[in-house]
Image (cartoon, rainbow, N blue to C red; front, side):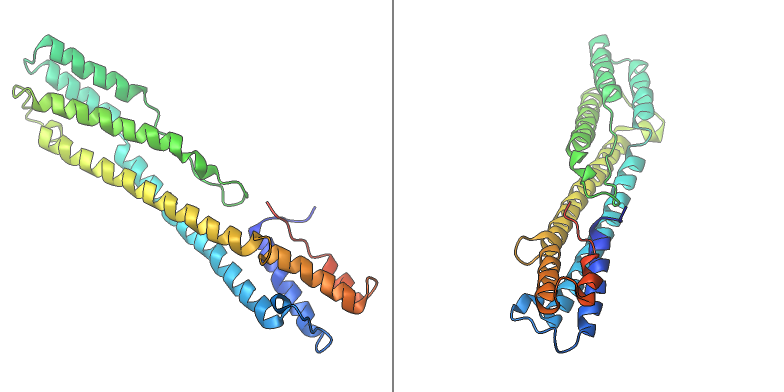
Length: 238
């Protein structure tokens, strides 16, 4: 079974260019899209667009990992905060409110979805669900901080439990979340560019490759060694 995917399409296109270049003067298409210089330009553009996806995908994974690291341990921290609030002398109803925010934080599953670069599907499109989860975590965390600020009796000696430290952590969490949002947008745009380069209906790489095959068939014949040489090159559209 032949290998399929974006990179094999580009690799087969490079092979096709090498073959038709070897045909010499008889390869003389009237369609400018099939000119050797145009084919080479399309190959260069397609290679760059695939590299662009790889680069932005790597950046997206870094942002996702950084966010996971930033959020790691927040539930344990909130447990300590609520316990500290409970023993601080805060009113019982305020303590219950804090416990309510803790339950909301504990109940949110913030799991990042990442795209598999070896498949044509964009698994990262599911990131909207994950994104909502992270956003809600920060919202509940901020609500808890506001509750603590409203009760000056909460003044723990532990530096990581102080309101100012928690506020700084909230800022860090929001920045990590924003980074993932921005990197996901960049990755999506890179994929759009790649798909346009490879799969556009009129001048995409796959469409051009099909036209080259038809032209070679018209020039040399269906049984010619030239056509048999390139007809086996597979180009697929996801």
